[in-house]
Image (cartoon, rainbow, N blue to C red; front, side, top):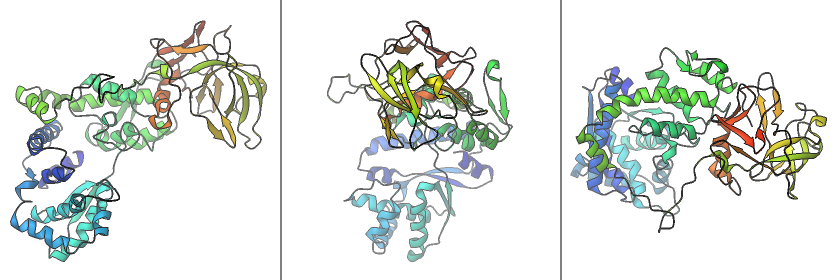
Length: 471
């Protein structure tokens, strides 16, 4: 929509196609009656979105696919196209937008041809979409001239990652912010968002800053809001400055989330307000009826696991033996007593950062339910938790309270009663999503989202690294 706004500001005539026939062909999952309601909803929400950022709408129009795609002329062109296109080319064109299976439905093979013909029947000069459309665009450029029609221009936007770090998906609720999400829903989704310190390639928050916030609301700069004890507010005039600072871990994920949340709510408030009218509330509920969730135990019922730190199996452990890894200069191999006869091998990347003698017979905090992982040939079955800073490089293992014993449980305030997962499944990225909110505070006490890490004897701390990420 921010790019559509650019087109309208530039004086272009913009047609937004509601591809209802395409949607119906998608396994016929949505009935016509529901598709018609969604067309009305989308027209209302798009207008509200554009009006909220002061975009002129005089040259914007909306067209339904079935207004012209069922005509005699269009249908004849579908047949003409089918006599030219091979099954290979049709499947290849839809590779990124149509689900790929060994025996595809014919509807999926028709999809690219319909989208190509839409250019001619809408009488446009150019088509605009995401880069996932590029193969369909190539298909249109190749085949429309064979029908005697003009080859069109094609514009593309990058595909930005969703909040979970992978591709944004309408079917994955937590990967996206909906335009009518409440402030509380926005806060919850951003808290759960994947935002690994220093990771700028799979970061939906940074992508949103680059493609939406900077062009629309942050033309004078993006302000990261943070407490004075963490350096106070700082404004980045250009996106590259913000990205560089995040890559160097000068901007903490928690501070980025809070700042994006503030800007997001500024963008969404006018849209939410417009949709408070009884007519639009009714339209929204009809277009997207809420399905009642079945209770656990009922047929089809599922229990959604909350993203909370009690899912981490954190325990006090004693390092009874430490030696250098035989095949890696940067790694130590430790033997760790985790109590109750549980002895594990742990591989840590602390060589050159923490002397071996400082680890020998030391108590530490260990994450014990990560999937075991081989590190240069030796399987590591837990992870030693440390406070860490990039510049100047420094690492300090966390210290359990004095008097602690191997095997004692480590937990967080407000999350004492939860039960750890038996194993943190890599695909669910539980640790990756919880870790960015783990840090030491200004008193060197370990926290998760402000909740203190502790055992029954007191708080978990580090020696000197204040306000630092814990990894």
